[in-house]
Amino acid sequence: MVFPQDSYSSSFSIMGVHDDTHKANLKAYGGMCMDCVNEAFRVIAREDLVDSEEKSLDLVPRHKRMAIILDDNLHVWKHDQSNLILVQKYFYFNSKSAKSIASFSALNTDEDETTGVLATILEKLKLIHRLFFNPKSKGGLVHRDVRSILANLRVLQGCKLTFKGNFPTSLKPENSCLWLMAEELGAICSMDDVLTPFTHVVTWAATAEESQQAELDKTILVHSRWLHACYDACKRYPEKDFQVELKN
View 1 (spheres, rainbow, N blue to C red):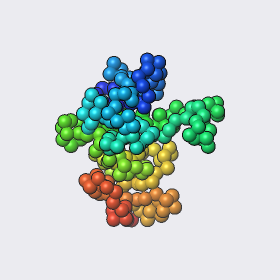
View 2 (tube, rainbow, N blue to C red):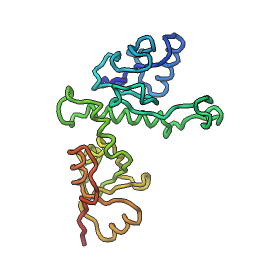
View 3 (cartoon, helix red, strand yellow):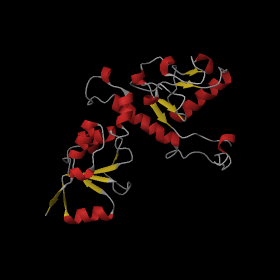
């Protein structure tokens, strides 16, 4: 999958051979689940590969810095793993290789349209696409690389952040530098504390009561300098080194 600015284009790399029916099914599947198939759609089959047991981005007509791989098998991408988003294997029908897993067909259901793997991956692709073409990112477009974005997204993966006292009322939080930095590092950001159980509250200062409540909620209060430090170093620093000030 490669990133033209206004859409995605798709290549499917399979371990089977070229087959018109197979290609039609893949195109229908790709268009249905990601709405990203266009005239650039193509299938790379086993006979196209230099090594029939190894997949490669060398056959994709874009620079690797603009290509994302979605696959449930890490090991077939020996030389392009930095471009890979590993996805959960999909079992609609029963599989001999996963007898302990109940298939969707056996359960007479399918993935959830909003929380299933495909929906989650689509949201991640949209985020990567937005970060790649973000005009506020450092350097010009020619220097941007999805491999760097993917690496950054792992720094704060699993963190759910909200912000308190960081933004003027005239500024939309999602347009702030702090918010964008957190998203680039893989954190989920929201200002709605009803919808999301947060792991962190990013703030300048807190009262003793707010600090005690955060401890009861098992939420980490952390200074905004923590985000800046993590972003600059592209690694997660201990939150205890960036404690907020206590106010009366």
